[in-house]
Structure formats: structure tokens, C-alpha cells
Length: 438
Image 1 (cartoon, one colour):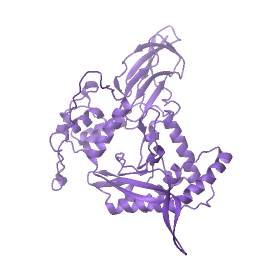
Image 2 (image 1 turned 180 degrees about the vertical axis):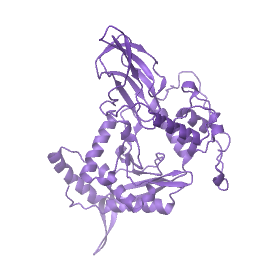
Image 3 (image 1 turned 120 degrees about the horizontal axis):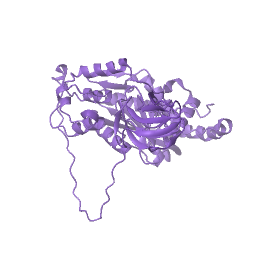
Image 4 (image 1 turned 30 degrees about the vertical axis):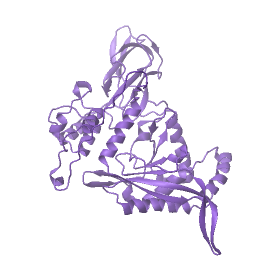
């Protein structure tokens, strides 16, 4: 009999730990190769961990709810084989969510050194390990090494998790320490404390604990509003030609490609064109540096059956034609709704689109998806009376119209840039050629 060590897989370059959500198998259960043993979660995505071998689950090292560092042994599997027992380390052949399978890696000395270098840049005053995510938040919030060392950690060996540092920021009572070059202009922001609600325990209220994803969304939204001064601009667009074209094209595409084309890829195409005209909105902020991205990766805010929200990312959207955008968008949205996204599917977005019109809303003021600096919301398309200029004079006609809104980070996107970008997207949509072939 051989004993195989099952280790916690690495789910991406910046992922240093994962939380065990559920053990699908119990001690003593038989396991087939590639059969799911447990479900895990990171800050990015939920995943299933398959067995690398067939055998019997002999020991579970960590209970459900425990956060474990990558490459730690989390279980032992006994396999049929030689009579002399031996211990071997095995990694799952792939980690799926469930069918997207990023490869599993062993942490190398290079990656350890990289994390150490990041900690060194903050001084690492207490010699604790800090994940790249925590270090990045600390850097954005100008948290010094000494200040970071004072934050109590709830992770293994008192490690500071994302939840710990966000909770600390929400209750921070003093202005963040500033870099020397920022002292002249940086201003302190008073800490905002949440009012404590009181209620009678008489059965008139129901207390519902947020699920893990809702907690992450809540933390991310609070952090975004705290980091970025939000401004929102609005514009109305006449998309009559676009609607006429889709009505004709959707039947043709379904017969030819079995493809359902929605308005989303058309919106993405217009956004990509406008980003090329105004590349500053495809950026992020690092202190007083503007990081302008050359890749155009569009996040698509997607509502899940659970009521939560996730943002899969369409990579290199500028390299796809409209048909390619339609296929890629449909694939991503389907993977999101069936919980099959991989960590790579939700990383590296540079701009986000939120379609509030799906729910019949005419406009919205979305919150920026950090570290991006802009997010667009598109409202419902409605038939509206409009004044049309003709050679014979003005007439009133029924047109298909919609509102577009853009929330942007006023640190680097001013009104003239945000408003011009939004108007350019509307111009591209209004100029859509209804005779266009696909």
C-alpha cells in the first residue's frame, strides 16, 4: 500500500491560499482517479479538486472552513500497491470549476523569493508572511510596514488575510501614512463607521448571514468607493438602426451558426473602438503613476442564479470581430452561470460593462471594479418619440433609444475625458450600419 499526499493546489500567480468549502468525500470513502474530493474557494473563484489517483481517503488534515496555504498537504490517500507503506506527494492533475482546468504548480524558490521581495518593499517589520493581494492593498492605501505589523491576522500563524486588512481600513481612525513625495498634496479622509442597528429579538426580523461571495462583493464595493472618487456621466443614444440589424441578423445567425446574438457584443465592439480613441480610460492608478494598459480586456458583469454577481473577462477584445465577440461573450456568460469559470477567466480586466437594461432599468450608476478606472452601464432599449431632422423639416417619429452611463475615477479621468468617451460610444452605436453583413 502506498500513501499519497494530496496538496492544496495553486490557483493562479497571486493566489497564495484557499479556503476549504466542503469535503465531498469522507475518511474511509473509496475514490476514483479524477473524482472530486473537495471544493475550495479563493478570492477569485470557487473550484473543485479532483483526486490524482484511485484509492481510499485515509486522513483529512484540515476541516471545512479552514484557510490553507498553497502546497500544504490537506489529505492522505491510500492506494493499492506494494505491501510496504510509502509516502509520496501528489498534486491533482487539474483543478476544475468544474471543467475549466488550470494547471497545478508547486511553489518554486523563485515564486517564494518574489513574495519575499514584495514584503521587503514594505519593510516586513514583523517577519510575517503577506500575500501579494494584501501587499497590494497595503500599497494602495499607503499602509506602512509598522502599521501593517499592527493589524491582527485571522489566518494561519496570525497571517493577515484580505478580510482582515479591509476590516482594518473600514475602522481606521487615523490618516494613512503618506510617501514623502505625496505629503504636500495628500489629504486625510476621516474614517467612516457603520451605525449599529438595534432591533428587538421578537421574531419580527430575520437575520441572514451573507454567503462567502456576497461578503467578497461587499468588501470589494466598500473598498472601491473608499479608493476612487466616483463621478458618473450620462448620455442618450438612438439605436434604431442597431435594433433593426439585430432583428434581422439573429435569425440568420441562429440558422447558420446556432448562435444567439445579444446586444452585449455590439456594445463591447463600440466600447473597444472608443477606448482606442481615448486610451486613458483603459488604465489603473498606482500612487501618482498612471498605468495605461495596451491590452483591452472587457469585464462583463453577470448576474448568477444565486443573486450574486461575477465579472468574467473577455481578453483582447480588440482582436475579435463582431462574430468572434458574440461567440466569446456567450461562452463566458454560460460558464459564469454554470459555475465553470477558471481563475484566468476573471482576471486582468481593464474596463467593465454592466447591462442594467437586462432587468428593465433605464440607467444605472455602477461602482468601479478596482483596479480599473471606469465602468459603463447600459440601460433598457425603449421605443420613444423623438424629433427627427429631415430635408422637409422636423418630424416626430418613434425611435429605439437608450441611456448609457459611465462611472469613472476622478483621480485621472476628468469630466471632459469621461464625457467625451461616453459620447463616442454613443456615436458608434448610433452610426451602426443596419445593412452590415456578419
